[in-house]
Image (cartoon, rainbow, N blue to C red):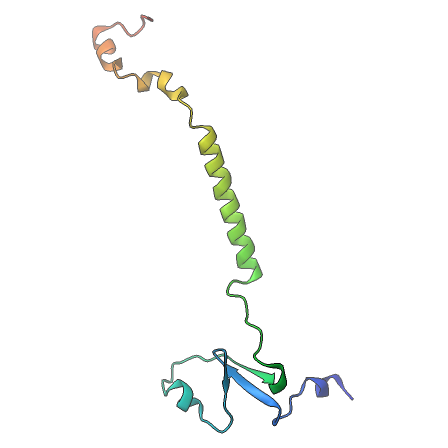
Length: 112
């Protein structure tokens, strides 16, 4: 009658899921996954009638929000660069190809 009893799984009606596959009862873990001691396995117990457990998302919610903010910021920067793609800088003195010649001849103050 307690809450804990509802969460307990019966041994006969429980299946073990590893890497999206049902792990058969009576087999050793080493039979299925090998004998490498450094292998990390995440297994889930699930009621046998319900099928495989739901997949967990690859990216958690916090990482997803951070990525969305980063891409939004990047998109805004690209919009600003696209708007500032005009040729205003060509009229400045540093963009004039004949500026060095004018400065050597002393005629940079004469405007055409």
